[in-house]
Image (cartoon, rainbow, N blue to C red; front, top):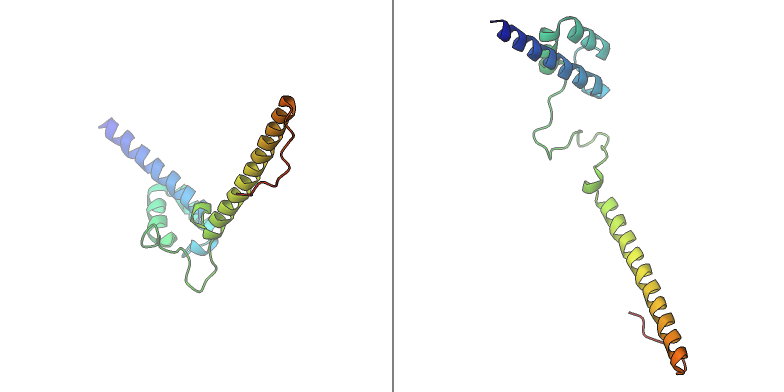
Length: 134
């Protein structure tokens, strides 16, 4: 019987901690009914009842699914995660293309320099014609 009481006590504490974290990290517009400080005090002084009350009445319900928008269509637009933002992904792709082109250009210059050095050592004149760019 004592184990059951200890288990119920730990569940109550865990629920209170989760409710406190949820309350303290909720945006100001997502808190319903009472101000944030009142919810924190209710959760601290009445852990079981306050936690249940917070989850049922104090916070707004989450959106319908993981892909659902978090703000109203006419409301402020929330920032997207970097891997969901098409502008950010395009900028990464463009930066990668520029870096690849620069690296390729440097490799070609190095290869030309090495070829010219080898020709000079062998006594052949270095190439003077323009090589086509790829």
